[in-house]
Image 1: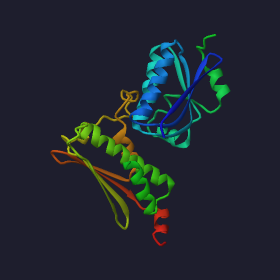
Image 2: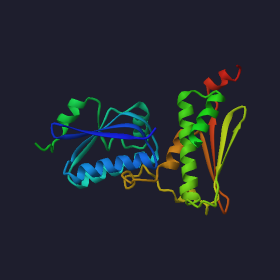
Image 3: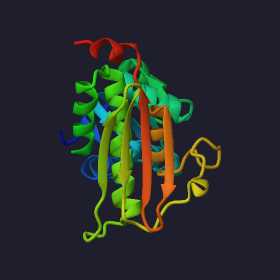
Image 4: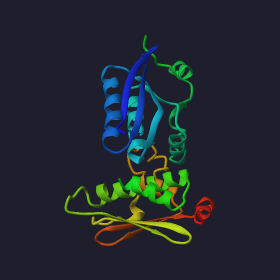
Length: 118
Length: 128
């Protein structure tokens, strides 16, 4: 299943709802383009909703890391929302769980951004 | 495709959902490595996946026709200086998900052998 990325804006935070697989090729490219598009519009508070991400491979993990560093390099914040067990386990074993700010509740996640624009 | 086949074979041989997922993911990563890093996208080169079930284990061998891989040259993705790198986690994930992993330089080519031992769940289904 191809990855779908849908954007919505809530209280100055760009929420990207991801649905499908983040894997080498199309899935990774769709995620990369979604984050680049937001950054190009000056939207630097990004919350990736991974609730419906069914699968992620090493390339997908790499893409999440790239997204994180790209946003951080532009003085923004990128956080992850609602990890499935599989994604959670992958971030644990790759020691990235401590790198990302991972949230379970959307409202709380939105509130946690410190650099929100009006 | 390799991933789906591995998932099916592991299920057929009695591995449970989580083990099936781990085996399939390890095979996918090994196949991707074979095509990208081994064969370097050369359409004239092939890669092969072989499955064998022994009494104790599922053994999967992925072979490419590339220039070969030195396992010692693979950086540790958990090292602080590598943690935020965008690549380099494939072999690490394979090692995390399988019970035994052997990388053999065939000069040319690389052969990676993945072993998953039968757990309790597989032993039970063997009787069916």
